[in-house]
Image 1 (cartoon, rainbow over the protein chains, first blue to last red):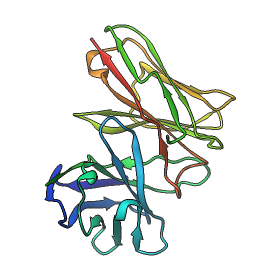
Image 2 (cartoon, rainbow over the protein chains, first blue to last red):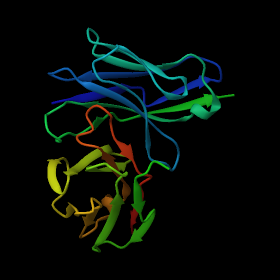
Image 3 (spheres, chains in turn green, orange):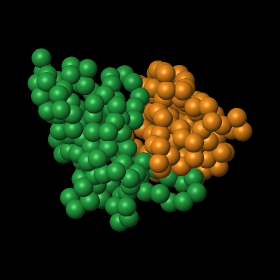
Length: 116
Length: 114
């Protein structure tokens, strides 16, 4: 079965500091990996995705993530945090099953706080 | 606006009651997914429909059921409601299986059971 583990349910950084949110996956076949962001009282928005092309993936709002097969990781980073980055971030894994059958498995989320 | 529309945004109801949550997918999307988000369980996949047919099932209780109609909108029916069913219910859609492009989420329906 596929799963993702997000280390750290709460992360706090200062404005301008590096953001690092950790995600490790478990999958018996090559996975597709996603990061989503959820702002308060809103739905989830796709930040970026890894679908077996380039291992370094760039997303919206200056975020990027690197797929490391040897470490089964897909950590999310941003060089300089902004106050507007404060939100909850979810890592998700999907395994293609053919046809239109699919489900995304989400991690438990990491709440990012940005201090002025 | 993501293009996925969920109604109502908020719902307050009593234990034992039945409610229906509605979702209209993004234009052109054939798959609809339902998720439940609660503080203790996180984001739990409930069920997927593709072009009117059930395709994948997750941790959906027997008291819950869903369907997708010919116009591709979907409804999630929750019956014999319990306090523990209080949660945010999200609908998401994708063109097909969403494996490559991921899902587009609606803004959710917040259900409170009192």
